[in-house]
Length: 493
Image (tube, rainbow, N blue to C red; front, side, top):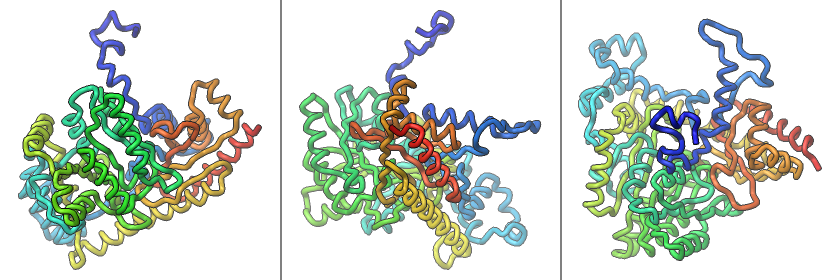
C-alpha cells in the first residue's frame, strides 16, 4: 500500500483498478525519459546554458504521430481562417487583411461563413456538432465514396480517440463484452477496454502479407472467444494501419464486412490515415459496405458501421486542436439516441477543432484564390513524408537482423528486429523486454524516441519497434543505423 494511504482519501490501491491496469505505450516510460532529456537540453528563462553532458543535442520524438511537434508546417489557409475566427474584429478591415497581411478573399469568406454557423468559437455548439459543419463532412464522404451521406449520422468529436471512447462506452455493457482488435494495434483500444473492464479479443495481422488482415485468424480468434464465454460485439480495423503502415485492399475490406455480417458484429473503421496512402488506393469501409449492399440487396442491410476520421493526421496534422468525426451507418435509432446522450454529457467537441474539420473536408478548390498555395503546401508535406518513409525503409533493409515491410500508408514503419542472446540476457537483468531494452539504448545514445513492439502487441517470439517518419530531414536515420551497428557489436555472441 502507498505510504501516503493514511494521510489522504485516495491512494493507488483504492482508485479504479481498471485505470491502473490500462497501458498506453506511446506515452509511457520511454516518452517520459525523452521529455526529461528535452528539458535538460532546453535553454531556460532567464537564459541558462543547456546540459552538454548528453551525447546528442536534440530529442526526436518518433514515438507518436504528432506532426507539428516535428516541424510540419500548418496549412496557411487553415491558420489564416482560424486567426479570424479567434478574433473576428479583424474582419472589420478586409482591405488591410488583403493588402497588408496577404489574406485572400476565400479566407475571409470562409471565416465569415463559419462564424455564421457557430456564432463564436468560444461558445458551445450542438452536442453532435455544428449542423453546417456536419453537412460539409457528409458532402465530403459523398464525394469520396460515390454514395449518399446524411449529416444526421455524423458526430463531431475531440479527435478520433474521443469517438472511440464514446462508441466503446456504449457497446461495452458487461465484463464479458469483447471487441476484436488487430494485433499489433494502437493501444487506445486495449487501454479503453481495460478501463471499461471489457475484453480485448486479439486477432493477428499477417506480417508476411504486408500486415494484411487474415480472415482465418479473425475466425479463429472469434471462435475461441465465444467458447470462453465472451460476448463479441464488434471488430476494429485500422486502415491504413497503425503501427504497421499497411493499407488494406478492397478485397480485405470486403472480407471483414462479410465476416461482420455473418456474425452480427459492429465494424469500427479507424480511417484517420486515409489520405496517407503511398501504394494503391484507399478504400473506405463505407464504400465497401455500400458496394456489397448494391451487389446483394438485403443481405448486408443490417450491418452496423462506425467510421472515424481526425484532423490530427494526414497532411493537416492539427493534433492539438482536437477535432474529428465519426459516421454511423445501419445503427438502430434508439441506440443512436443513446450515443447522442453520451456525447451530450461532455457538452460538445472543441469548436475550433470542428472548424478545422470543416476545412479539412472542404479545402480550397482549383480556381479559388488560396488554392495554389494550399496545393503547394499539401503536396510538399505528402512528398516529404514519402521521401522520409523510403529513406527509413532503405536504411532498415541494410541493418543487420532487421526486416521491414515496404511502407504503404499512415506515418509509421514497424520493423522486426533480431537481437543477440547477450542483449536479451542483459534486458532480463534490467527487468525489460528485449525490444524495450533496445529502444531505451537507442534513446540514451541518440535522443531518438521510438516505441517497442511489446506496447502494440506482437506474436510470441518476435520483436519489433514502431517509428514515425515525421521528423524533418533524413540525417537522423543515419543515427539509428550507426547506433544499431554499435549495439550489435557490443552484444555479439
